[in-house]
Length: 238
Ligand code: SF4
Ligand code: FES
Image 1: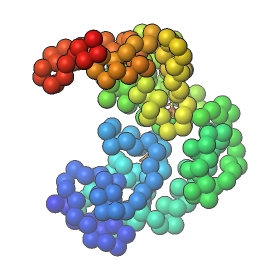
Image 2 (image 1 turned 90 degrees about the horizontal axis):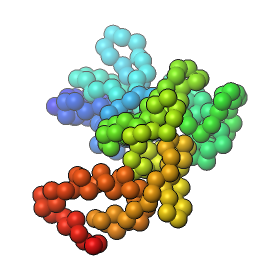
Image 3 (image 1 turned 30 degrees about the vertical axis):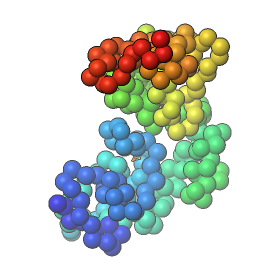
């Protein structure tokens, strides 16, 4: 076990835990945006920063979602420097996603009502990378990625064209914290707005959901083709 101090409280953490995990296991709240427990940490939004003190060294701010627990570390999760950082991050988010209710609500939690500046190409994508990582790490498809640099950075399928590999599963829609990616279901068609084209809608043979894309259905059927090992009958709905 690793012994550290967080907000003046002695904590024991399992080796390999991040500061964020140790805090959450001990009921200490830290705001996050680009973190998801099912995905590898990415450290993009910097909303989760905490201040750490190591012997003899001056303190510094680190992303709690990516920084590992270390023996003897002293951590402050709500110091003046941390609060100042959160307000700056909130203001930057507001500058890039100013018309997004989720971002407006988050910023107001930190007392930021308005950004002093606006990004030139502001839209509601905050480049948190959750959709890209979910597509790669959970779905295993990598239909989208982060392209370009600086203010031109954005999420896109290859060559900014309709993705040939996207299965229309909607995982990116579900995980996007700002609602930038949307799913549209109209009669007979299922569409992930922004990143892929329309898909035929099909009924899932496992759960009967009518809003599956036919490509996603094919993938599920492939995965469950050895139905007995999953205890599932592929013929539940005819
Ligand atoms: S589309 Fe949504 S999930 Fe993807 S990077 Fe932008 S804000 Fe994050
Ligand atoms: S949640 Fe840690 S950097 Fe975004």
